[in-house]
Amino acid sequence: MRRLMFGVLTLVLMADFAAAAEPKAVVEKAIEAHGGRKLLEKYPAAKVSFTGEMAIMGQNATITGMNTTDKGKIKVELDISVAGQKVKVLQLATADKAAVSVSVGGMKIDAPVTAGQKEELKLSSLFADMTTLVPLLDDKRFELKAEDDAEVEKKKANVISVTIKGTEKRVKLYFDKESHLLVQTEREGLVPGSQEEKTGKLITSFSEYKAVNGVQAPMKFVSKVDGEVFLTATVTEHVNLEKLDAKEFTIDD
Image 1 (cartoon, rainbow, N blue to C red):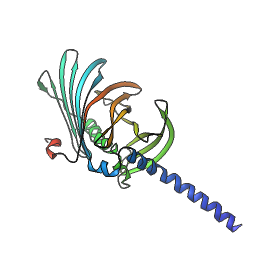
Image 2 (cartoon, one colour):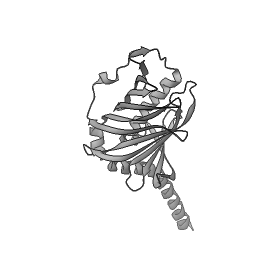
Image 3 (tube, helix red, strand yellow):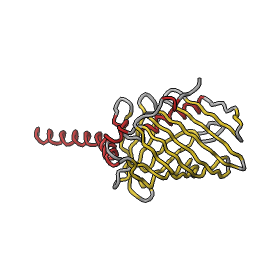
Image 4 (spheres, rainbow, N blue to C red):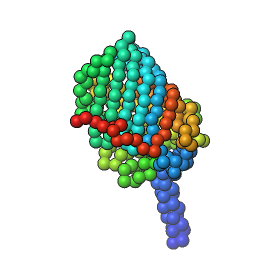
């Protein structure tokens, strides 16, 4: 009887251990699929240029832009054409600072950033860091949990819930079960362009992967807010970088 009970207990403990190890195993497979840890750590920074369409206050806008990222820092530059107007937007965010600059028709306008918007921008920098995958292995920063499998574009995906330790902020990452590539992110956040700081479900899907310096990078992404398409973009150039000048992310106080 003791042997039987010991055997049952061992199986239970092994099952618990396997379940706990599963999220990290999914991430490790994704790291390999995206180019391997060595290459991902070699190129922690990137400049991604894109074109696309965006919905702004019920109107369709065409955009060109560039995302610059490096170890939890992000800069987004947008040139927007909407209703005959040319709008430029610059967003900068690090783990502890955020700023926004807006100009319409070449004239800079006062665009005060609320505390909620600053927090959203700072979180966006952390979420961008997560999508480089290797940081997810840091148990001191992130807590990983396996969720039920899901379908993304009619294909099965592993789902990992990632919580930023010390906060209640969480993002779900979806990895294609066959390719192990990151195909979708999902989180709660501020609705883009909302003046009342309304929150909603923000989902971004990634597709048409291409190898850049040996690292797999998506060439198309689509963002939705509460199920409605907000942004569709195609990457025109993706440059992986070993480092960036700190001035890229300078924020004037």
